[in-house]
Length: 205
Image (cartoon, rainbow, N blue to C red; front, side):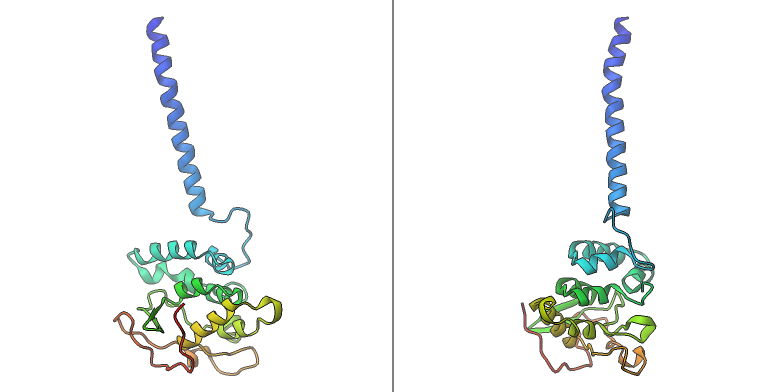
């Protein structure tokens, strides 16, 4: 009987530990797969859309880190260019909401010597991507349309950043295909200078 009691006393804590470890693993998996519990995404949207809309730069950076460490970077970065049912990409959400830090991440922008530059374009995000299947608004137009109480200094900073990176203002009433206003092709050299020369030079924060 003494052996039986000793066996039970030593086995139960070990079993509890295994259960706790399993529960922790499940919780971590849930946190990874569902970063925003309770959030219902619009058709076609991803958590990157939501993160860009609310300004969650930490989540966006974590997704960039995962994508850049993947074997197939092009396939891994698809979500950064994914359109929802209205043709909105994460860059549109960040622009409309005035989240300049998220825009810097999505557009891979660094300030060098007081001027904004794009690094090698790994994410493939077009600074002039248009909503509504290429016939809607560019990120710059979305920023410009924010007026009154809803407009903040951050929206002005977003506009400056986008213009400095070659952004143009196009809306539903503007003709022309998105490809005509595509972002400058970047070389493999970091901090290479775009062919587009901005009218406004961004000032370092």
